Image (cartoon, rainbow, N blue to C red):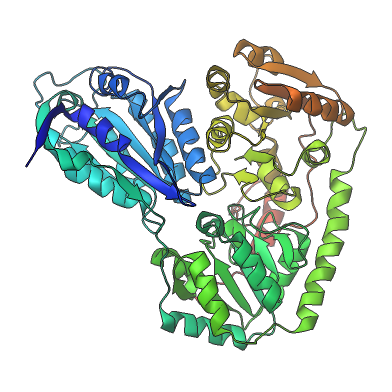
Length: 615
């Protein structure tokens, strides 16, 4: 067996550089690169190896460990999970900063390779700087925090262990069912140790998307349910985009006369002007989609986890005879809530299910009801996004301005606060992947870093980050990274002076305004944050606008610019789109001195009676 002597870190970099992916007949590197923030624990081992391999595997320097992992996750999502990135940190706080991002990837089923530094395997200098010690277990380190939020976790304590660990990592990262974050905690002394690795370990490997073909019996059950339905309904999830099945889905729905709604992850998969496309579903759904969902007798989920925001906490589907079918690559998701599972790739499953249905179509009246409901919703939505001269416009009015002056190829990015709800209901994506909202974990601070990852994946499309002042203050460092890398973003900051979304939720559950809007917090002096000056200090060009008309003009100018742009506008913290939407199960205290809470509790108990539980 022919071997080559390398350090473990050098071997890891060489292996990752040899991974390729075939997309539409063209081979590309599987790993776009490695985001790295160096410290003790990875600078002398992986740092040296990445320097030597920087042409084959580019290294990107970021400003925050959590943020760089968010960027890597967004890159994978915008690449339909076919390409990905790795992230490396030092031991200690650098490592644990990535745990939140690992959870984002885990919940959203997105691939990212995390390589935190770890303690010395030989334990001679223990406890090393930043090492977290367990009084009763000498094998534990801070990196064990990654275990519950990793699809695969390993600790590299000998140089030869990277061979099985990396092979297993690639299986998880590229498998459509297992896909998610992989953590390889890399002991810092082991990174620098040499081993005679087999040359075959570094041979180029080309990965191709696996399409799981569903079991014929499962397809037959699904077809039987649909054939008997009078009011079928499709829920489009993120799996449709990951499969590249958006055309197959809308053609299937058009042939069969089935209305289709989108989850947050699935939005942009169906054309906004298609007769069968009824928009967003669930807590932040359109009036059209939710009205139809409440009547549906067979609900076909394609690539969705049926999470609570999609299902209105399992109260949305009110037809007493309702049945669920779930097309999903992951059996764990396919059988949720006793759905009839069709375990398989969305594109492949739709093809075989379509064939199994023969000449069946939904009743024509059902399709007419969908078209009527969608037209009514479009008129309603237009009122909320219409141009206004209000001193403090709502989030919806800001989004209306961005849509009026935007282009079909734009990609909107968001994650948390009130904006995702408004976007889900109101945003009209012009093309697939044009809507990128991280709402599986709804992680504040994802937005700007996520925008950077999207721009890395889709460099020819304009990336528009919509963000509230709360999320901006929580994590904004990757503005500087976007400037440094020459990856232009347009960032629109809606400043409502606090956590406006949670303030509204607090009020809706009977709570007094408290600790959300800045004015309702304990303070001596209210901060007057100059977001424009701050953004400029990070290298961006920035402007504050005083009206919707000024916003539209500033956005047009931002499109023409070549570097990252930040536009700040003061917005209304109270106003939101009260049309559409659905109940969400947020527990209300059973006992309170506040009459408002007691009233909210009575309403909550009434709502619980319509939840679908255990059937």
